[in-house]
Image 1: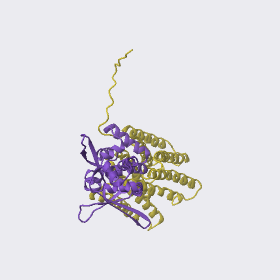
Image 2 (image 1 turned 180 degrees about the vertical axis):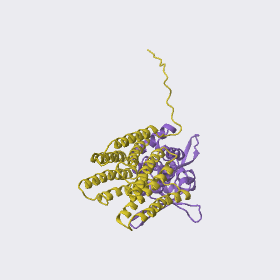
Image 3 (image 1 turned 60 degrees about the horizontal axis):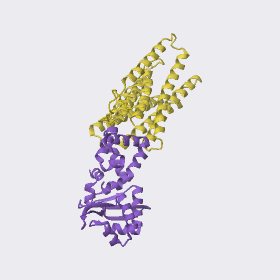
Length: 203
Length: 267
């Protein structure tokens, strides 16, 4: 799953439930399992399948629901050069997740180390000067939250392939506007390209 | 030890595409029931028999309550959800308004007071904004891009219906009276919800939710036809309590109840 999709998937489930009710969510999830053998969270990875099922239920209304769900989570801002895109996080859970990750010194250092070039976990721990036990736990949490994404491998001297990780964004901006915390992230181009959800946002 | 199942049990095949068909038998049952009722009314030898009014007001109240109860059940199913929960609560409340208004009208008539214009009309009119809220909330949430011809149709339909009525009624009424504006309010309300219901049916038509929305649109078409027909008959003083136009309202309410049942079945 694309890191960006994992980040966004956390909110989609609750947004569907909040707007259309638990019963509707269960019907959609049941149909996803029947037709594609996947759950709702997995369907976010393969957004095309989620789209097919939503269309089965709502017809053209699926387009509206998808856009609305995404608009509640993120707002895409086009830059003048059209290369770097800033995304404003709208969903409070996403904002909280991001602030909690950056509020933790160890996690912040790990994220900083992984911005730009992808690194293997041991290198990230070494650069960030974090003990291995707690370091692995925190890195796993960042991977689960979609803030660190796998990108490429290195082969060790004994032939094992070790995954390299990179931060999902290149820049982050946190500001307070009219008593509201505004978090904007600038995702890497690869994460936008690999995100099914961002493809819908961008169209 | 071992039992071989020699049966016709076939493995369950998952449907390639979900479909939801309209059960036309339900429509036939509704039509048959309404025809039986109408012939029953005709069986009264005296058209001024007070029992006719009791029967008529009871049937109107019950059919509206059936639709209202179906709406409340759906609202309960999606309770606390922003779109379905609230919108179906509004639709159910709108149908309840029809039932309550009918009782108020009957009560005022029995008391020898003028039943219309009266508070009963305000309660009847409340059906339109509540139903419009239901339709608009769903359409706004699911709204895909609406093509210009569809937009034009949705705007022109209520304008044409209202315009024709306003023109015909203005010639009959003694100027801009309360009755004129009241009649106009019913026409505006019913034509606007008709237009929104058709738009909803267009949006959902390729999904399974399209079936309940199509049925809902049919139900609203029937009530709109009833409202329009009643308004024209009222203008020319040709309405009577046994007039078959009442069947359009009863049928409309029952079809709306069927649409709500279908919604529950689909989602």
